[in-house]
Image 1 (cartoon, rainbow, N blue to C red):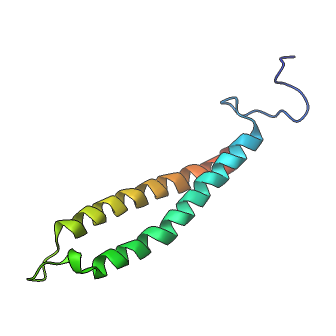
Image 2 (image 1 turned 90 degrees about the vertical axis):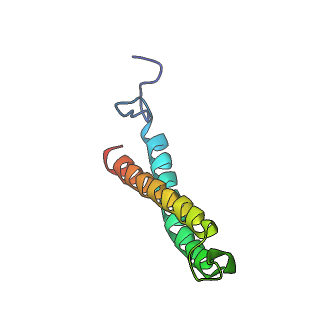
Image 3 (image 1 turned 135 degrees about the horizontal axis):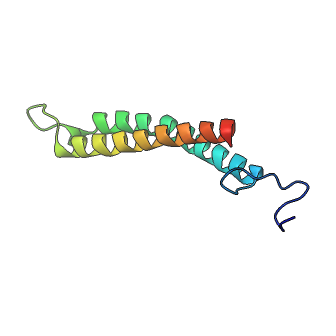
Length: 91
């Protein structure tokens, strides 16, 4: 028996214990939930900010840069959420 085998030492295919996989999956899901709660609210504040539109009412670079950053953050949150669920199911 190897040193890492034995009672309470169930390992996944990658060699991580089930406890580590569970903790990491919960962390990923928590990150995703937090991001989906925070970033849309932040986008609303950005859209309402005076710097988001110019004198003619057109969107400014301030708005478009923040929109792109928030979109990337939400995409990463979605990936994080999927990874967390996969970890919980198959971990």
